[in-house]
Amino acid sequence: MNRRLRLGVNIDHVATIRNARGGRHPDPVRAARLAAAAGADGITAHLREDRRHISDLDIERLGTEIDLPLNLEMAATAEMLAIALRHRPHAACIVPERREEVTTEGGLDAAGNLAALRPLVAELAAADIRVSLFIDPEPAQIDAAVALAAPVVELHTGAYCEAVAGAAREAELERLRVAADRAEAVGLECHAGHGLSYDTVGPVAAIPTIVELNIGHFLVGEAIFGGLDSAIKRMRAAMDQARRAATGERSA
Image (tube, rainbow, N blue to C red; front, side, top):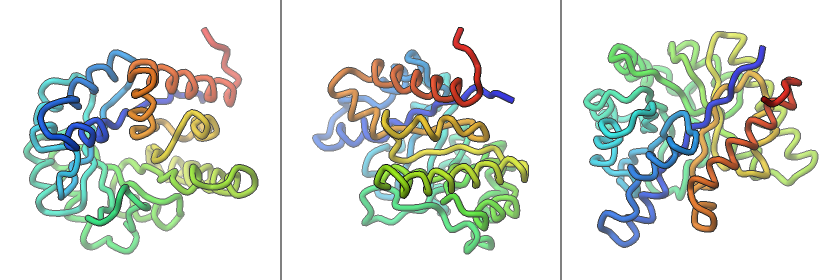
């Protein structure tokens, strides 16, 4: 069965540029509006504990000024839980977070933290917030998502993107394929993201059991040279082309 592959655009690094100098420009909410017009299916924003890019005000504005579903990336902390319950985003993706990291370095160890994660997932679900877990493509982590009653997993694609093209990258791609198939088999919706670019997105987009990709840093970087609208449209086209090729569907 062919499914349309959704694109979630992460606007964190528009806020990173803003925060480098302070003030209000560039505005990540404006970026979200542009992403919507360019064909994004959702907006992703990571409210970090140190507020290094997205701010609390950004989350408030995204919830009230943008029509697309908001996916709030958050650490598994009491502070972030309270913020999510206050703003009620469409979805909350629980991610690992270390203050000293430059970017998210790997997936959440859901299997090793079941007791701590269970009440947090339950509270989010009770508030009608769709919970996803950002995990490495490992069977134990998928099984942990089932045990936690999280309906969605997002597979960390960083190892695949960073692998040298050839056998190493194909091995990482196969890990993603196997994990996505396992997720579907146990009743989970499967997303993927981290580090995807024009050069790496095609093989991931071709995996039919992945239904959403979340991409941000690369798109913001490309926007410097050709505009955010152009970058998103090109990514959307690459995703759609890869999915059509994989399923044998003809373009309209």
